[in-house]
Length: 362
Image 1 (cartoon, rainbow, N blue to C red):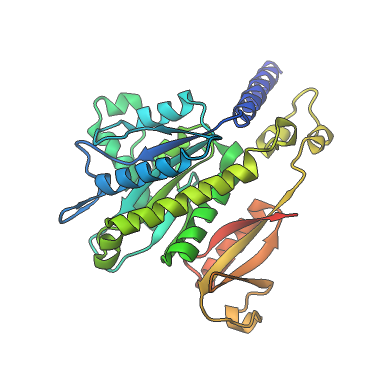
Image 2: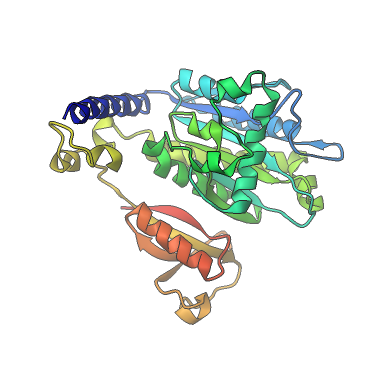
């Protein structure tokens, strides 16, 4: 009985903590932390004279320049020059700033010259081997830091068991992160004519350690001859910066105007025996506008009949026509977990690059 009562106090503290975070999400100024990955002694992925740390710094500075033109947005940088910033400090900068959004920008690179495409990560627990390799790459910078074992308390980016054992500290903001990530990838496709590898959930330390919605963007593969040339070019960096900036502004307009009365308290709090808090109380403070989740299967210039025979037997297919592209979606869910099951089903059918996108049900 004593243990049960003690746990209730902990739950109450957690509830108060989330309430404070929600108030922080609705300050007059929308604050964005821009994180250029790597830097200094850590060049990141390299191919010839192309260095990841240089590309991402240029892109972050361009994003910041665009956002700073908006009087309602404050921009904070983890670095503005070629310096090495520890992962721990990157998270600290965001948390101390009480930011509304954390954006970390990176580039991909592998031995093969065939791999290409953009992808945007949110915090998650995917068990896909390929995604674990990405996590190990982005987390591997830990080993360049002094006393990393003490700072990260046994977190080993090369140990899948460690990665899979991580808890999602920012569960409260996961859905918002997914919506932003979807907006970024959709912009890359429709505005920059890029190949998208989709939105993916992955345990990445710097996302886990920040207490706000956040994404890690992979701009493309420096190891792909054409893509490497594009993402390191001035034109490519300008286009990608604009697409990311527009996605951030769309996110701000969708989420930042909401007051604390309209914020949603997540299920992990509701499922506990917390005195004075019932599900009926929560219904009164739930979001008025429902979010619809769909699985984007593919996009192209060809208009395809949405009958199941054309989509490997999948039913409930919808299509949207935007900027000369036809986008095909599977499902229509109001519950994110239900949509995750549809995503798994789509991937089993062969849609390996499918990902979840969100729509506002007006």
